[in-house]
Image 1 (cartoon, helix red, strand yellow):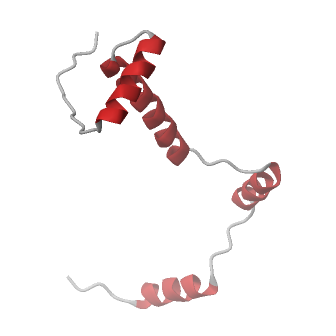
Image 2 (cartoon, one colour):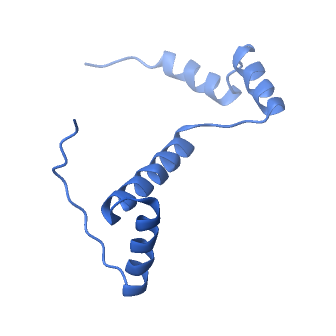
Length: 91
């Protein structure tokens, strides 16, 4: 069982409180249960949306092709790597 040892507070208008109370009553739960369930559901969806990359089939195919293809570093990177090899380390 999860220990509930944290508390959050929110200020709302009387109209919002009445609406939440009615919705919670219709759902057969307390206002706290209603708010927590809705907030956790929304939070999980938002986090999942930001952790997941969704691509159309053709975009996925292009990505996989690029990942599977040969590595071709940019010419500028090759030039920098060659320049770095000529440097001598001084300790």
